[in-house]
Length: 236
Image (tube, rainbow, N blue to C red; front, side, top):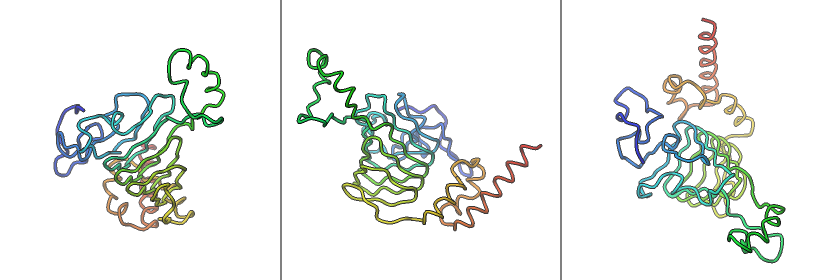
């Protein structure tokens, strides 16, 4: 992985989302995903990062996605935290309609020619894998194809996520099951409306402590302040 240049943010500054290594040059404990991407099958929002310290210099696509043959994609929101060893499976499902699950279509020649129509008729694709904003993945979690993970969810270390995860829900285990809800459905909806991850970076910086440990009421108050400021600027 290469960095577009410059240095890590000095004191008083905020991290540059265009940098690959926001902590220090070459510090793979924190790698911003978006500027490190080289392919077309992964999209990531600003400030989402992963721990690449055990990846041996491999890119996010090389080390964290499996069976990325397309057209299925991995879409990651903003401000996500992805621990060491987390993997996303984008494909690799076999047709399981009949008695054999062997992937005959994978092999060029007579097997592929004779089974392609059958494969397409029983397409095992589950679509894109979509991760919301501010999702935290514990070490060595695995996400299966086509899963949707809501904003603010927490994925426990070693979890195998086989189905969708609701916003602000903690899951763990194999297969991953709900451990608890961080907020009620009503409060999760309030946080979704506040959508702090879409605020201007100066506003996020100003209210970072509230975002980390504040109440929903405090976050709503901050969101209202941000909206008022934006509306004022738009009329100038």
